[in-house]
Structures are given as C-alpha cells and as structure tokens.
Amino acid sequence: MTATSPKTFLVCHGAWSAGWAWKKMHPLMQAAGHRLVTPTYTGLGERAHLAHPAIDLDAHIEDVLNVIKYEDLRDIVLIGHSYGGMVATGVADRARDKVRQLIYIDAFVPSDGQSLLDLNQAAVLRMQELAKAGGWRVPPNPTPSDTSPTDVEWLSTRRVDMPIKCFEAKFKLQGGALTLPRSYIYATRITPADTFGPFAKMTKSDSAWRYYEIDASHSPNVTAPEALMALLQEIAA
Image (tube, rainbow, N blue to C red; front, top):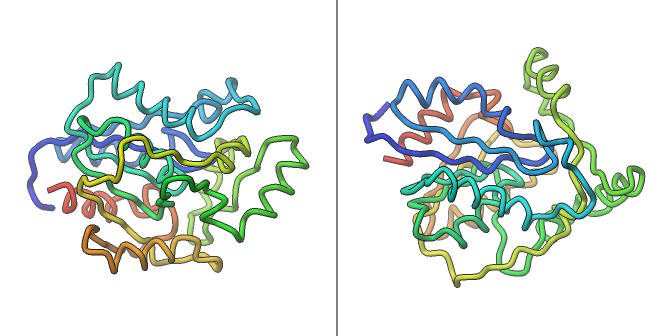
C-alpha cells in the first residue's frame, strides 16, 4: 500500500445494513493510520428499535450530517456504498466545507429529483409488493453467492427491513452541482441484474470522475476487505 497521511473515512452504508457491516475494515484502517467512522442510520442495526414508516432518505442524510457536526469531522473522505450512494450525495451536497472527496462503491448516483426507485426500475414492482406484504417494510435482498457461509450467517442475523420511503423519496440537491473529486468503484462480480453497471458506464466515460474496478461482489467490505482497503488508500492518496 502507498503510504498516505492519516485520513478520516466516513461511511454511508447500504440498505438493510448498518455500521456493523464494516467491522472487518476497522483494523485495516487503524493499521494504516486512518480513522474509520461508520454510523448507523435511524431504524437499522443497533437503532432498529427506532424504525417507523415515515423514515426516508432525508432522515438518513440528517443522521450522517449530525455525526459530522457532533464528532467535529473535517477533511472527510466520504464513502457511499449501494443505497449509501443516495445518502452520501446528500451529505456531500449539504456539508461541502467538510468533505474533501467522495467515493462510491457499487452505489447509486442520483441526480436532482431522482429516487432510488427511479434509478432501479427493475426493482420497483418487487419492492412495492414486498412492502405491501409487510405494510411499509422491505425485506433484505439475498447475499451474493460468493459470500462465505460464516459471513452469510453473520449478515442474515443482523440485517433488518428497510422503510419503503427510503427508496421512494426524491433526492433534492440544495447547493448546485457537486464539484468535489469523485471516484466510482465498480464490483465486477456482478449479479444477474447488474444494477450498478449503468453507473459504472456513466462514470467511466466522464472525465469529472475517477473510475476503478474491484474483483469482488457487491459488498467488498465483507468479502474482500484487504483489496478494498488497498483501493481506498490508493484513491484517498
């Protein structure tokens, strides 16, 4: 790994997940001299008891903004994974003076006025049907097939349903176009739907972005932590 000055990495985690899912990354970040902050959104993980039907994307953006405020974070390398790309885009928009760069890992990249469901038409009917069955709760997607049995057990006992409004809420850009450095990491062990292929294609062909690939399935923080660490360190440098 390239030696770099100490950085503060702040994670906006994926759907159904929480800060706990980044457990394998903490010792790697610490060994490299970096700080890794992995807050959990309202209604998920250790905050699952706070779940209610009105929780939406805005609430999760506010969760992370409050961590920045109360932890007094600055010069942040902001990471958005999967659904966390929606959250991270909102955080970067509203905390422009605190975020140094933005890294998307197999994540949604919204434009102003778009919801996650706008960006993932294939999932619309399925999610709405699942939410109908549970009232407002959308159960987790299956874990990728290359996830080890131990990790599948670890994940499946901790992942919880998502409020459907998180996927339906439209992202609202408040400060104009984002101009900070942005990178996209595409996990090349794709699922049949290849949900994130369009974002990989878009960012790869746009000179405003730096584009990277990782030989991993959708959650490299779980299945390929060392490879992800090396890549994050390279990008942050």
